Amino acid sequence: MAARRSSRPIWGRLESGLVAPQGTVSDLSLSSSQTYLQIKEKGLAIERLYEESNVPLAKTSELAQLIRVAKALSDAWLMGQEGELPVSVLFRVAVLDRIAGAVLPLRALPDRTRFLTALNSGI
Image (cartoon, rainbow, N blue to C red):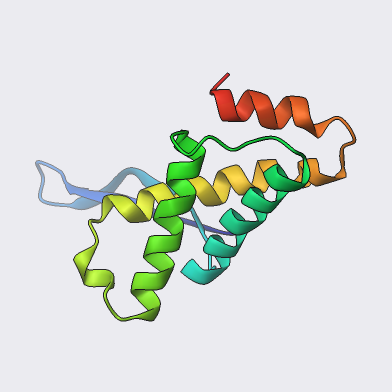
């Protein structure tokens, strides 16, 4: 993710009529240029990781729901139907992207099943 930083002065009028700086406003934001399809692919990779690890991903789990939402958003975007989805879908897909960043590296661990099981159960 790319970080953007900016700061600017806050100007205010004094009783004398002069305009003087009275502080600063700063902003730090992170931005990502990933497509919805890329995030959907991360969700599919999580599903594969669970399958390869022989850990069932409960269909009612929050993680499974986030993956379904990512699939729906990607498919709707590709079909030109993204306007029909609520804005909350974007936030849920962003959450999945962050979770994927933590879960997918587990692929390299030999004892990943305990972590995947804990994530699946919400612990």
